[in-house]
Image (cartoon, rainbow over all chains, first blue to last red; front, side, top):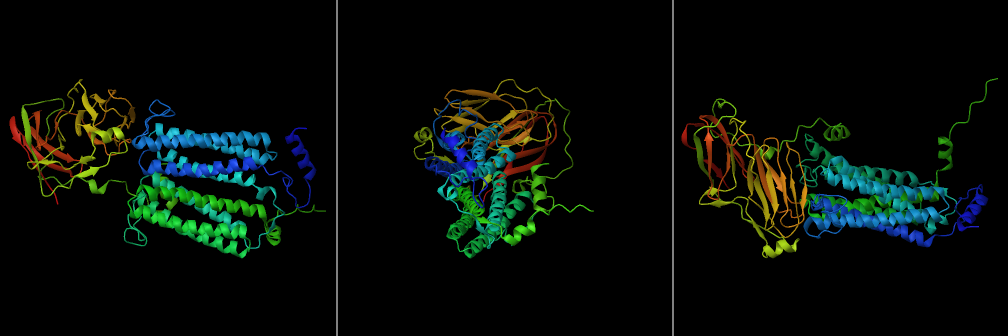
Length: 339
Length: 253
């Protein structure tokens, strides 16, 4: 019997256990887990490098794609250093993902995780194509924004793969009741942060980053005159920042109430990252979009999303809805037939 | 749905007014007059319009640009590249594009190309005037790679690579558009401007600020001077056969 068939056999025997998880008896795939972690970390670095491309205005320093000036390796000078460097880093992450997907397909008994790995591979391929399209079509806003948002979504996929192959997930016990609403708070934080990243990408790729050039006031007022799209977009991003701070504060509060360090520690770290992110946003404006704070703002945004997403997944793993809530939201039984 | 509309709907805000680059509006005409009367299309004449664009006041200090990002550029400019956008000599302002806004068009465009060269990690010339449809020969005389990336608003944008010394590309623009910025994304300090005009009545000021436009039919014209930093000035002038003079004066801080 092959290892995979043996695993399936184990799984089929375990199905139906009360409160059990079908993967509870899985061995910890240590090597694949660390490969996933490496893919995840590389993706965060790739997002930083991608941010550098835009921050340095190098997005079109290489006018062709998939080759660079007709070469595999052009001279790494000026803007080519950033743009071609981004392509090289993206190729590296693509290869990591390809290996991870094939590895997962061959060794992973859980169909959901296999699908997740294939989904990550599909996402990284589409991401590469979007990167090429945005160069060929001279940085159209829609493609550039999609490229930026898919990068964040792909980062979340790699986090999910890393968590799904972790010892924490494999050996998780039955979920406890989510009395502190950590699941809701984490899910809300992730949603708000992703929406904020979308606004940030729109602002960045429409050149609205300095549409409001002062901070903390906006054009000398609390609410600036919203008479142009760039100012409106920029101001929305600032409003979004307030929403992110509120969501992170609520998540930290609920995580602390849960008295579970698996939630309270990362939620505290999330608060620190959000504070750093607000500071970097201010620095981006006040330095006139200097390369380093602007790029760090992009990467820290990804880290904030990644951490809130990790908390969401972790909450889904370890917590279940409170019983009363489950009853309230359960589907109604079929109506009894009228005699 | 356009992006602007999408953003506006998302914001639930009022429909924004179109972006107009408010700070870059043309200066009011120096001379107000009734609508100028221009000759018929396709005609040329014997009028010559010349003059000097002067600059008074203090010009901005030249900017020292670091070019170390490309060792080839660095070797040509070991101390960095001195960029002076407001270039003044004997009170005259260089690199101003002067054109007759309402001159008759329809004259055939020259077949010979205007050359825009990349030399020393700079564009030569800094300001180029061409006719609509006239070929522009873009050459790379540097032993390093460049990309050539004009950012027009009316014409089609393009981005081409010239990775080797001696490469040439020929392009043209088919619509009138003044001062199209041209840049190299590899070397962000590189900047040139191409003005595309429907007729032959334009000029770029020399180092001493003088210009000359020949073959202008007699008539009343609106003449615009356009400097990349100091922006535009417009005057109305009546041109007769023979020599005519029109000066512009920019004021510094």
